[in-house]
Length: 304
Image 1 (tube, rainbow, N blue to C red):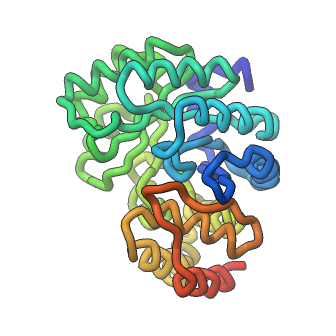
Image 2 (image 1 turned 180 degrees about the vertical axis):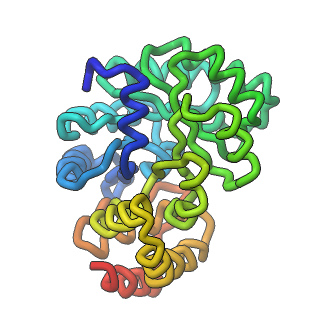
Image 3 (image 1 turned 60 degrees about the vertical axis):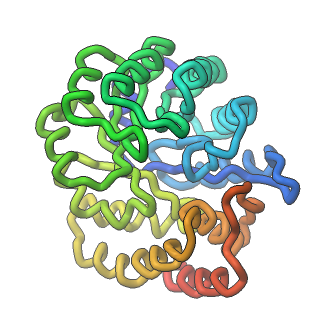
């Protein structure tokens, strides 16, 4: 895996379900590295095609850059052979460049470039941002189109032309027309990843747009169900997919939507329910209350 090209890593990512593990924290909010390492090893028993360390589900936004490096290092060391570990980069361009270099230094296999922190930017500014990060590393880079970094088809086309190691496009917007424009213009030059919260909700319509994989947050606590859902999707078993949506995914999303930030909090709650606690979420997020936790437990019983 260490000698695989960015394109080979991207192809691997697009071939199956993607794992976005949570970051384990102690009660005082510090990183629980031992528990995190144990969990990475446990998740490695299941058949994911890529592991994205310290991503959105992993509370990237709450971690300091040194903590991100610590999390990525642990993931690289504990992930099974052949499983690509993708590291995050984000915030301003200078910080993102340093994080990309750090990821390469500790042995990660690719970069997920998250939106810049706080500020809006023009398409020209976003293009310059991505170009500088791509130039700073030999690793393949996947851009995450979301929030204040929503890339137009012309911006993506320019980046593909200018950055050989830009290998992936993760969509966190859900604009079908925009995805159609990007896929029609770029085709299979990029690997397309579904990146909306609870991506299973969007997996069926997105498959026709070249989005062959997605970030599965529920993989953290119901990994076999997440894999069964993905495999049914890829083999065209629509009946299974619709049943799973009605039985679990849609009511789960209803619970997730109770409060802002629950897209992450509900994952840690799910891990608590299945006996694999990962600690609390960090401020400014908040954990589910006891009533919501009980509701989630009832849903999990249906698929376990």
